[in-house]
Image 1 (cartoon, rainbow, N blue to C red):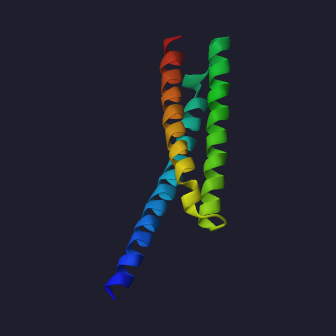
Image 2 (tube, rainbow, N blue to C red):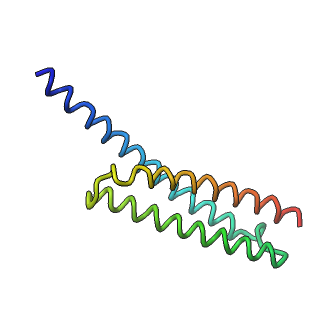
Length: 114
């Protein structure tokens, strides 16, 4: 009996970790919407051509990240593919999210200074 419970335990831990990663991706989806709203506010209106190019690049990056997150979440939830196949990709999404968030914050600071 002890052997059976030990075998099930690592699997449930991995399942918990996978669920936590997906949950974090879902929270990032909400954060991406907030970042998009910030970029669409009048405070962030580009005043120069370079700011216009930067804001468009950020908006495209946010949209791509959102779409990729949606695809990963859907595939893992529908169990079309094992979440284990997505762990590295999810971690990459987290890194890209942090980069996008930093980019938006830098843009906002730069837009306010113009």
